[in-house]
Structure formats: structure tokens, C-alpha cells
Length: 235
Ligand code: APR
Image (cartoon, rainbow, N blue to C red):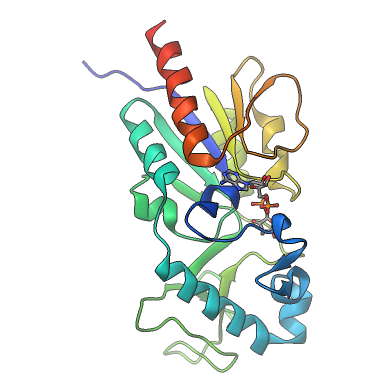
């Protein structure tokens, strides 16, 4: 007999990767690894100084290779035993994938990928031996490469799918985000009425009274969530 599992949709932000040693954005006072966010993560910044932006993401890739998925990432993978887990992440790291999660949608792009400027649908995955790009880097057809990152001032192509997933959730969970960046923060509005919503964050942003806040770091908070959900599964 085939049983369908409930759909658990999880929206993660920088706090999800904090325990892996990757710094969050707003906790660092508007600076991202000592750079103004708008210099290294906006369309204007890239147009103004592409060299800096390439160098910045080259460094972030080197950092990412040194990082490992943390206990929280692994716990989310474990939840797939009981739920159809859908992860919508604002993070550009690949730690959910490396932890084994099956369905991961990146809203703000992926650090280990680049795409061509001339043909944006042409995306390449970098590997350990080819981590670095410069404004002169091209593919075999001579098209210029850029980080596969959604810069501020650019559209968020995956938001539509994220909204669809959210609207189908049986349980919705937000982990480690300051809910400061739109449209990602607006996903909460698409959760159906009556669906349980949890928010795991040691320093949570203000949210509605329908949201159960678990004021803890990601790994501890997810363990607590799993207990709560386990109890509700038994009922
Ligand atoms: N576990 C869980 N949450 C944590 C932890 C932890 N160990 N440590 C910090 N946090 C929380 C903070 O309390 C904060 O609410 O993580 C959140 C991080 O917030 P931001 O730094 O604003 O990150 P995020 O919400 O993901 O930023 C959104 O902004 O600069 C852009 O594109 C970038 O995707 C990013 C977007």
C-alpha cells in the first residue's frame, strides 16, 4: 500500500549555515566579509566593479569548500523519512545538497555555479580545480561568465515555484532568516489558513501570533521541532 507523506516546506536563511561557520549578513552589521553588500551583491555593484565581484565570489567558494553541513542540515535530511520535505533556501551555499536533501530550491542563486552573460540559461557548475572566474572568463563559445547569483536589483526567478510549494504545505517552517529581504520574506503570506507554522531563530524577527517561535539555533531548534512534529504524527 502506498501512503502519501505530509508535505513539510522549509524556508531557510543564513542562520541555517551559521553553525557551519558561514557568516550571516545582518548579524555582521551590514557588512558581508568586510564588504558593503551593495558593492558585491548588487547589479550596480557588478556593473561598477566586476573584478571585485568576481574576486569576492572566488573567495566565498574557497570558504564554502572548507565548510561542512551541520547537524541541522543533516536533521532536515532525516525528516524525509516521515515527510515530503521541500527546502526553499535564500542561501547560495550547497550545504543542504551535501547533507543529502532531495528537493532544494535556491532563491538567490548558487555559489558553485556560473552562467553566461550573453545566454543566462547557460549555467555551468564549477569544481574544486576550477573555482575562480574573472571578468575575462568565457565558456568554449566565448560567452562571458558571471556568478550564478541573484543580485539585489535583479528578479528572483524561482519565487513562483517557491510560492507554489508554500501554498501546498501541510506544515511550514522558517529557519535562520531575519525576514528582511523580499520576496523571500513574503512566502509566509502564501501558507494556507490553519497550516502550522514554526520559526526557528535565536533572535527572531517579529511575526504573527499564528507562528510558533522556537527561539534556538538551527540544530537545537530542528531537534525540538522534530519532537513536536513526531508527537503530532502519533495523534
Ligand atoms: N541558527 C539559526 N538562526 C541563526 C543562527 C543559528 N545558529 N545564528 C544566527 N541566526 C539568525 C539571526 O538571528 C538572523 O535572524 O539568522 C538570521 C540571519 O539573518 P540575515 O543575516 O539577514 O540572513 P538572511 O535573512 O538569510 O538574509 C537574506 O539577504 O544579503 C541578502 O541575499 C542575501 O540571502 C540573503 C538575504
